[in-house]
Image (tube, rainbow, N blue to C red):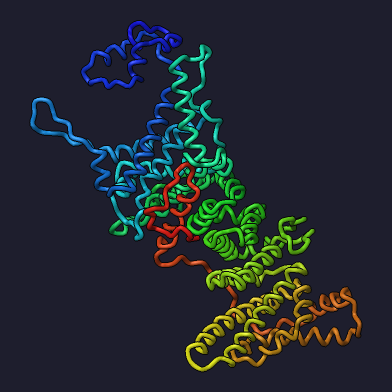
Length: 616
C-alpha cells in the first residue's frame, strides 16, 4: 500500500499500513487515504483474501443483528439500516433502505456461491445471518404472521429465488460436508510467508473461526465442533424448517417456501410440470433419501422427514417404492426404543412418521418380508432373526408400555394404537416374542382396568368417583382398540400367525371378564370362536403336548377353520391429520431446535418468550 510498495514481502514495513492499524483517528479528508490506495504491485489472482473479508463482515453484521433484534423493534431495526443522502445542488434527500438489500444479498450469496473449502465459512455465515434476521419470533409469545422481514421473504425481491434457495438448502443437507480445518480454508499462507498482512489476516480469521466453530467464549474447546461436525448442513436444515413453517400471508397468500418443499420432483421424473405449481424444482431423490436415512439422530432431521412424507406426495411415493425401507424405518425405531433419552416432541414426530407409513398397505406387507439379523440395540431379548414388521410391533408396544408407566400421554397412546391397527390386517408370521408382547400389553391393560374399578368402588361418592369414571372410559377405549387389533389379525391372516394363536390360548383367561362386558361383547365373539375352536383341537390331540406339537395342531387348525365362522368388522384404517392451526405446535418446536442446536448462535435464555426453557 502506498507508492513505495511493490510486493507482498514489503507490506510489513509499509508505513501506511502501520498508520491504518494504529490507535490515532484519521479524518475523512486526510491525504493518508489517497496515499493508502496508491499501490503498484499486481493485485492477487486468488479470491481468498476477499472471502476472508466478506466472512468477517458477515460475522460482525450477524453479531450486531443478534443484539439489535433482542433490544429493538423491527421498525427500529429498519431505521438502523436506512440512511439519507443529500443530493448535490438540491434540498431533497434520497433515502436508501438497506435491510431488504441485506436479505436479498444473503439469499443470492447462498444460492450462487459454490460450496468449496474456501467458501464454507462465508456460506455458513450467510445462512446463520438469515436465521438471526428471522429470530424476532423467539422474543414473542404469539405467532408472528407479518412484519418487514416476513414481507421481504414473501413478497419482495427474494420471492423469485424461493425454489433456488430451498433446493440449495436441501443440497447442503444432502452433501453433509464437514467443517474444513480452521483458518487454512479461509486464507492460505503464501510461499513468502505474507509478512504483517498475512499475520493479521490469519490471526483474525482464525479467531473468528474459533468463535464460529467452538460456539463463542465460555464453550469447552472443541465441544460444539464435536457435537456439530456438519455445521453448514445443520444450519441449512434449520433455516429450511424455519422458512417452510412460516405462516401463510394475509388474504390466504400461501407460504412460497412451503409450496417449494411440498411440490419438488425427482430429477429422474421426466413428466411435464403443471403450470399452476409455483416454485417447483427437481432434486435427486436417491441422494435425499440416503441423507434422510443416515441423519435420523437429530430432531431436525426427523422433522424434515415428517414434512416430506406428510406434504410432498412425490417424495412419499418414492420412499414407499424403495426396496430398502429398513434403512429408513430402523433409525425411527431406535428413536422410539430410546424414548427415555429423547424429548417428547422427537418421539411424537417419529411416531407420526410410522403412522403415515402404515397408512399404505404396500408398506404393511413389505415390512414382514424384510428379515433382520442380530438387532444388538434391542436389549430386552436377543433377537438373532426377526422381520422388520415384528420388530416394529415390538418397539411400538414397548413405547405404549413406557408411556403408561411414565408420561401417560393420551395422544401417544392413540397414535401408537393407530399404527398397530393400520398394520393388523397385514400381520404376517409374527415373531414369537412379538405375539407374546401383544398379549402381554392386553394383560397390562386388563390389570389397569381392574385396579381402576377397585379404586372407584372403594372411593366415596363425588368428584373422585367421577375422576375414576373418566379414567375407566379411557382405559376401556384402549382395551377395545387392542381387541379390534387382535381380531383384525385373526380375521384376515389367521393362517399366517400361529404364534399369536399360541399366545392367545396360553393367556385365554385374560379375556374371560370381557366376554359379557357391553362395550366388548361384539368383538369378543370372534376371539371366543378362535379360542374355542383351537381348544377343542388341542383337547382332541391328547395331554402333555410339547410346544412343537401344540404349534403343529395350531397350524393345521388354522387351515381348517372356516372363514365364515368369524364375523366381519369394518377395516381398521387411521390417517394422520394435522391440527387446524399446526403453526401453534411447529413454530415453537422449530425455534426451540434453532435455539438448542443452532451452531455458534448461543442466545441468552433471558427474553425468550416463544417457549419455556424446559419445553420438549
